[in-house]
Length: 249
Ligand SMILES: Nc1ncnc2c1ncn2[C@@H]1O[C@H](COP(=O)(O)OP(=O)(O)OP(=O)(O)O)[C@@H](O)[C@H]1O
Ligand SMILES: [Mg+2]
Image (cartoon, rainbow, N blue to C red):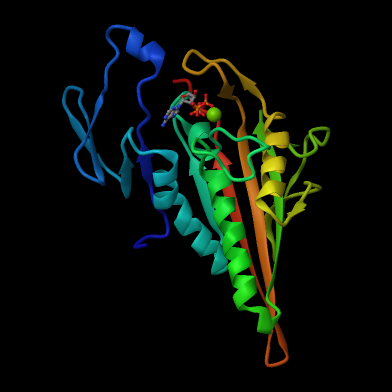
């Protein structure tokens, strides 16, 4: 990667309402893998790190935007993915997609978060296997919070509301008393995701019947420990996956 920050634009297909209403049409034309034109008057061209047109499915998008995050975390770097855009533009579809607790292996329509964790858990198993001589062990903990009306609620334990944001010289910014669950398998993470997602505040907007009215942050801390030449080593990374509430303007 050339830059620390990468911007990907995803274009969603027209939905049924848009297809059935005369007057709604595509307003974008992809020029290249990095460039897109808004076909208004006058036409405007925009450049991004990647343009994902409407035929790009969840799997392909994950390979472009999610996979590098997993490798970053394995190397001990903090990483963050967040989705930004108007209501109904596909942020929750991109981040979470269709998830089910039963499907331990994420299905074809599942989004970035379950795919990132499927790969992360597989990579951890691989690394632990190859680092057996050094007693390499990983420990992952996940939390899931919602910010609604500037108040923080723990989605894992929704009775825990109005949590406080604090700053620590070692840890950085953190949310006090937020539940952290240790996870060891994709199944653990899918259960946490599905059970906590239902606690999120959702209501209808003109553009989206199931619009997320809050921002959510799914965080995973990945800690690894190993021994080399009788010295204990450790590495720490934090992965933040953010789904913002959409703008209605
Ligand atoms: N790339 C896509 N392919 C197919 N369907 C999509 C795509 N993107 C979004 N959708 C569908 O469009 C609808 C709205 O998407 P979504 O709920 O993700 O929007 P959002 O950006 O999260 O909106 P809000 O800000 O209101 O929460 C959903 O039914 C979703 O399944
Ligand atoms: Mg949403």
